[in-house]
Length: 274
Image (cartoon, rainbow, N blue to C red; front, side, top):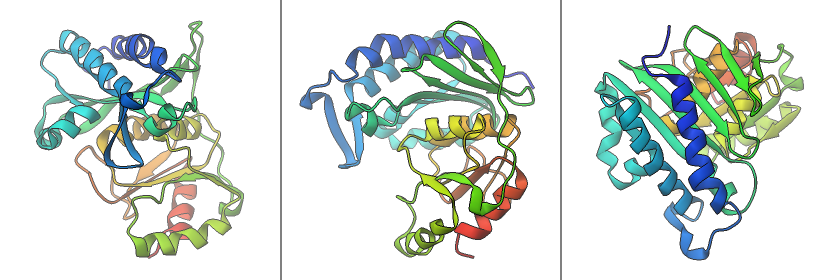
């Protein structure tokens, strides 16, 4: 399936926004440029808002009929989130994924966009402003990494291994307290676990063979649509714990992305309370 929007053009918009609005502010933010949204760990910066305005403006030229749904626009008007459910065509954007890292001067953040057609994710972009490279996918066409020099390689998830040998990223922040208490002891059965506080880089790691699974709750579309398609097109397996597909209409619950179906099953059975 070819996405109904020029994916290369959309990737260029993300890069231009990052170069104009994000990187000049990296390690150059004043205290007044950083604000809390819902908590001390939920931040927004001038870079998030300026980059989203840039991307929204350019997307209106690229795809004037598409719904534009950005994390910061939804923060300002939560009702916008529900428009995604019925949109014919939408562009879903996280202008700075990993804002807490960005605000702390840690070079681990990303710019993400997903293209949604009639409730299905058909295009994905995760751009790394620090490395100046992009991972990109269209449904049915595979996933690729493109460097700043224009070189391209096809992405492939890792070969399956036993759960005890896996490398996995898991975010327990939004699990209910009882669920979190049940999950944390089970991490002892994993070889290496991590949490980059940046889903974009965790999905990039999984799609490129550097990890075996990711587990997330609180399924905001700007955090997970692009990454889940990227992993699936790189040969991975993505689903909710009951085995049903993760879709743009899912806002709550858990999603597991893994290098293949066997590791997906092992991660679900080994980590999540039944």
